[in-house]
Amino acid sequence: MTDIKKGLAGVTVDETAVSKVNPETNSLLYRGYPVQELAATQPFEAVAYLLWNGELPDAAQLAALRQVERQHRALTDDVRAAIDLLPTAAHPMDEVRTAVSVIGARETAGIANVMDAVGTPEENLERSIRLWAELPAAVAYGQRRRRGEELIEPRDDLDYAANFLWMTFGEEADPVVVDAFNRSMTLYAEHSFNASTFTARVIASTLSDLYSAVVGAIGALKGPLHGGANEAVLHVFTEIGSAENVGPWLDTALAEKRKIMGFGHRVYKRGDSRVPTMKAALDTLVAHYDRPDVAALYDALEAQFVERKGIYPNLDYPSGPAYDLMGFDTLTFTPLFVAARVTGWTAHIREQQASNALIRPLSAYVGPDERHVEGYIADAADVEAQERAEEAVG
Image (cartoon, rainbow, N blue to C red):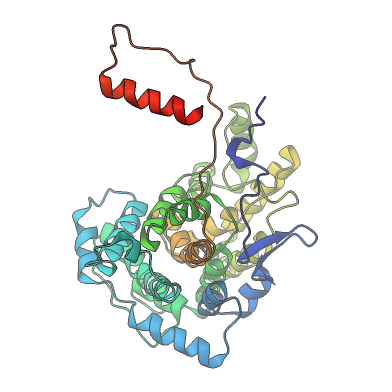
């Protein structure tokens, strides 16, 4: 009997040098560096450079990357027009997916041979940087458009995280908020062969272009069992209301066998290694905005759920309330994930292209045995093809 690995659980399909979870230290590593160390010490631009190039940048390399990123921050007219065609009730992930499609169509326009659209390693690094640079403008504009607010142009005197917040809210964010946001981007940037990354690699393995692979990854990330979980966490917080309501709410939720989003992870058995860093960032925001009620609700739900189920929080649990305190709409949470993870996706796409093999798993067929349509009469071409096939087998 065929051994089926549902969800590819436990299946190693390829090698990667981009990231791994070290089971000995329970640390997520980017190119060997523990992510908590990167989040505590590096701007997101440096983390992006690391994922694409394998090493942290020196001062000159970081300055060069920042210069290019700042040249491509503005929301181009074609992307803005495409977003404006969508209903304001559309999910923001649909806006982001559309934005990437338009960017890809623009960047590959005039390439008649689909093989040429795949791009060289150098071309795809340039594409990765430009896509990463423009996505914050699309995410920020999406939120502002839904609120009936005007587009905010980027500023080239602000770092990536500070500019992202500027374009979203139209005012300079406090350094505490910038630091918390920067850390969240680093923590979300990469996570080995997760569902969206694997989707991107499958598409890249067909020799499709980088943009098509990213669009596919966005579709995978939209699902609540992957990127959409951070939205679901905020819905849970809103539903509970306050720390005093946690016990009765959890009684009902468990009795109804509801899945409590923000807890549990297939990779981590001793708790998500990214949570302490994001929880510390959340604590700084709670203090900055004077919202002890958020911390009380967070702590109460975590304590009771861990006590009853023995399942620990994942990164989405602290990031949801953190983004809410910053002022992001709940529907914007997963697009923020996209803006960060595009660095990891594109690193994996380029890695896949460098040593490619078409990803094409087998399946175990469980349908009816071969059967035939009543009254079917094969024509001469069918018979001839069947005879050739039998001769080849023979």
